[in-house]
Image 1: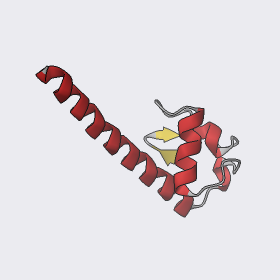
Image 2 (image 1 turned 120 degrees about the vertical axis):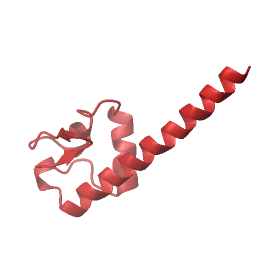
Image 3 (image 1 turned 60 degrees about the vertical axis):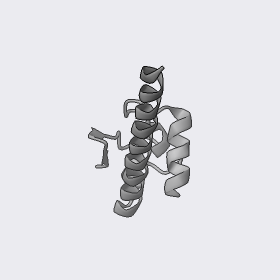
Image 4 (image 1 turned 90 degrees about the vertical axis):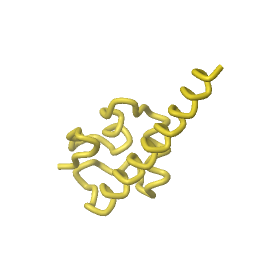
Length: 81
């Protein structure tokens, strides 16, 4: 069972669909994540290898960290003005 970002992904769905079960990830972001992780979007969740799941987790973690930095910069910029 693939567990990513605290969510158990549905086993019989394609990976790109499974990722949309995670809050904040839609179709576009799902495909972007899988592209960066070099995972085929039509692979079933139950067929993911541990390495593929790890790469997906790593991309999500990096993406969330980057978005936190961007949000922090925006809030500093708007509160200073």
